[in-house]
Length: 280
Image: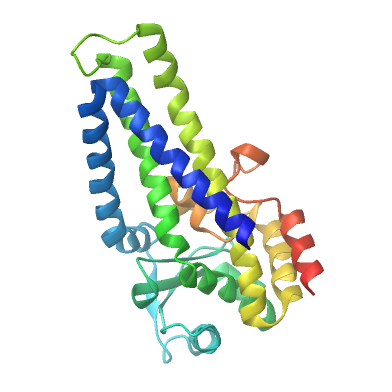
């Protein structure tokens, strides 16, 4: 557990440092300060409104104990076990089996599941998946992933600005064009790699925590095996339209998920399952 948290902290520091470097390249010390202020404003907006934006992207429909007693009952039982406030519960009308959590903190959280995952998994397996998502809420992973995604997007925007308009140092002199070109091209790639590494670290922690909350590591392992087998062949239109949200899902929902290792938002299913089996 400590190892993944330490890795996340180091990666978050790296993406902040990269943001500052881009700002400094564009406008020296003042540029760095302005870039960090810009990133802070974007994070503030994302922190408060990202949950509403994502749920709207997926056309998620809120349910309650009357409209969906099965899913709502599972989430309520697990939230009590985890010591969390009851989150809002949503269903997404998609055939691909998947789920995610969102919200700025445990008091304003939401969990969503697709109709495909409700139909495919047994009650025991669905408990494992929902426990995984509630662990994201408990660990405030939503805040971490929102910040990393926002910063990565802002770095790309700043790098594009630097590429087309050039940069200046604190004394107003134009920076080295070759260096500027390299930074502008490589910084967005580095930011994306860092963001993906953060996402993978948080998924391992959510698997571990979810197994503890549900009390059944094998249930989540079985669910991940099923989801991995079916999700690849069932496209998820909402996710394809909004690929930036892929890191939120319990399994990468994009059809082009063959890219592995450094370029994956999720650890390999085989490694996740192996860790869960070892817990059992």
